[in-house]
Image 1: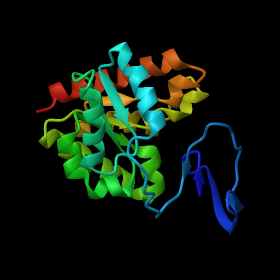
Image 2 (image 1 turned 120 degrees about the horizontal axis):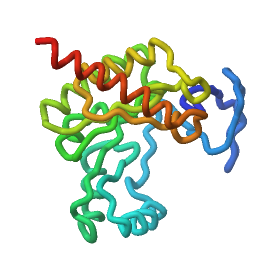
Image 3 (image 1 turned 90 degrees about the horizontal axis):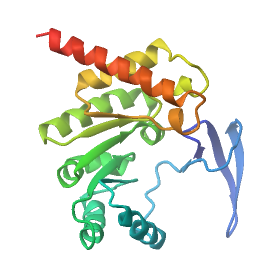
Image 4 (image 1 turned 30 degrees about the horizontal axis):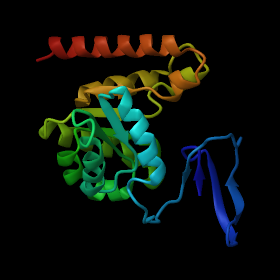
Length: 220
């Protein structure tokens, strides 16, 4: 069991009816509201839960332009959400988050059905060996461009800036390379949600993007 994008790793040693006993293989600070991943297990559940339906009915009242659908497994998940949205707010677009092996197996259908794609590298880096994520990212971006769909690269773009007012050189290169690959959008998350320098992060990313796009204009 992975917690917080793999920062903590547990191995199940015993199971009860409503509990698990685990051994800590890789420890860390366990904070509230962190994600949990169970790899190599296909969890069969409804694409849209009752809570999702309640949340959706509230969200659509605000006239949203976009909704991000988490853990999309196939194009059928997107169709179910679109059917609900179309009842009251058909102009709302769906961005499908690609963050599982199931999604990768069905990626062509997902790209065709969704209005846009989010490459969610945090969960991809758990369900896949981390060294495969960069190439997977490039393949998804390429597929989206071929299908004329916007594509968002997300997770840990400038992660060090949660606590630092400058990014690492590797992070700056990561942002630039996502643009060079053809990503149409970049997504900040923890950097602006809980970071110490949210405005600075946006400014730094904006400068990297503009500088990279200028290079593209000047380079045949």
